[in-house]
Image (cartoon, rainbow, N blue to C red; front, side):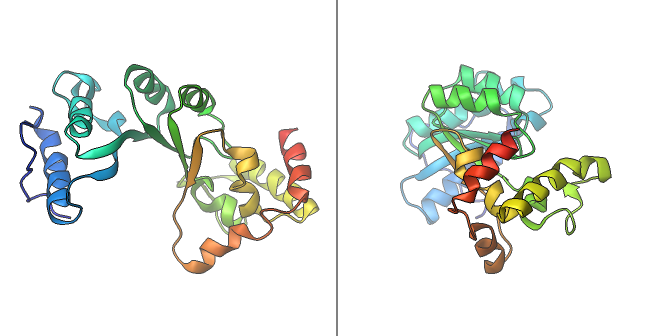
Amino acid sequence: MSATQPCRWPGFTPPHWPAFAPPLTLVGGCCTRRIPGHVQVLHLHDPEYAEDIEQVTRPGGALDALFKMKEEGLATAVGLAMGRVDLMLSLVKDYPFDLILSHNRYTLLNRNADALFEFASANRISILNAAPFAGGVLAKGSSQVQRLTYQEANERDLEPVRSIEQICSKQSVPLGAAACSSRFVIPEYSRRSWAFRNPDEYSRPWTGLKRPCLRMYGANSAR
């Protein structure tokens, strides 16, 4: 997609903050050339990296633009995708998002998104729980990946991973299957979201996903 295609939304003026002109132009060009009419889901991505969050929330800012695009029919559903859960919860409480995407904050190793997901579930906001493998270590194991959420990890950081690996080994449950099992890591109104580099990586975690021994694994992991 190119950011050079002009937007064509009758009656819509892009917000005055210049930094948001390219994404608005990009979406307009995409809809004009590839998906006539609208896109199904449109996220505002990583607003925590704005110089000032008021650039996102102020009148005419990014959030106004996002909901205006839904109002104009450019997007069926609009969401918020980011990592910082405290700020995300605050924004989700203040704006009527249809869905949210949080990454690496609701896994076998991390429950920082508990309050966020509880609020979203209670308010019927759809949840995309991205990166349930914590950057790959919960898919390939600590012997192959010495990183957590894309950052280098030391031996102490990897201790919880190895504890989970021991439980999985005792119960003959593949680590990746445990990591992406909806029974233990996914709340109501949610879906998982992840990326694979090849077909083998895609098929590996599903081996044994529905085995009865996952119930035993769940009891051990809870303790």
